[in-house]
Image 1 (tube, rainbow, N blue to C red):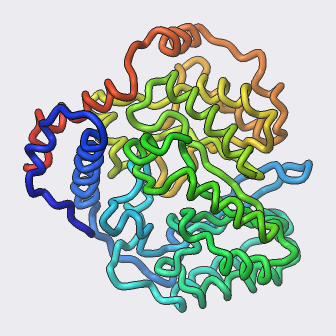
Image 2: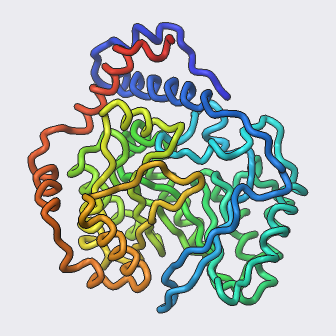
Length: 391
């Protein structure tokens, strides 16, 4: 993994400065802490011919009907953004269950993984296919071209597959790759998904460490559309350092932008607690709380009319340790309502839901004076107090 230059770093951490340098030293602290967090991930031995975890079956509403979908996670070295100098997204624990080897996994290994599981799936029963590598599918350092082409041809030959979802960072969206994808799967509804997360460039960099700009995202959307593919965008509800109200407001504005930019589907992903993440550190030190389920309902009610808005239900690999919650009385009921909404995309599924704990959420939303900047400063002071990066 890449290293952060620590020359003068401890002095920089203690400075109270404004402007670009102020922003830069937050980034340096987070980057160095992420490197330390990832260094604690235990090493495991992996069978490179097997996928990361058994195929999972979920659901999605598509073209007027609710369908089963098969979700396959390939075993790779992990997201290159996390393996190399940037140390990855602050909320993502995917790296913990990838090889993290510096040696590339061969195209033959990936093809073996794919074919071994693909041929077991009954696509008549599950016609939607999510093919993930917990990274960027169009990054040829993660998925070699030979493997990608073989997989796409295999998918295209199965006439029961109605839709496929692939994930990538925007810098890997090129005319060449999108044209090739369309040519290899001409009759399948292909959604190319990107994690926009938040509309604000500074907050996306500091809070989530995404490493790309809104302009790059917008340009990638246009390339996807140019080849008659379908953009899908992930929007993160309440990333690190956001208050509940800031999280709700930012998610609403980000969803609006994602649809205006050309997204066919937007998936609202409420932040969770995964091991080996900055979110874990913040949560464990009382510097962050996961969003309430009420906030999910609020965002969906205010944006569902804009397009196909679905709610991610905290189903990742590896699974999160903690997820958004309200109280013991209503959380399961609210989650069931969200599942019903996803099955139909009818907002009535989320209406007439109430609980006494809702008042606490409303108070938090309207009267908590903490701001993104307050929380960011509290984090900086905690890292200095613990002398964490020198230990």
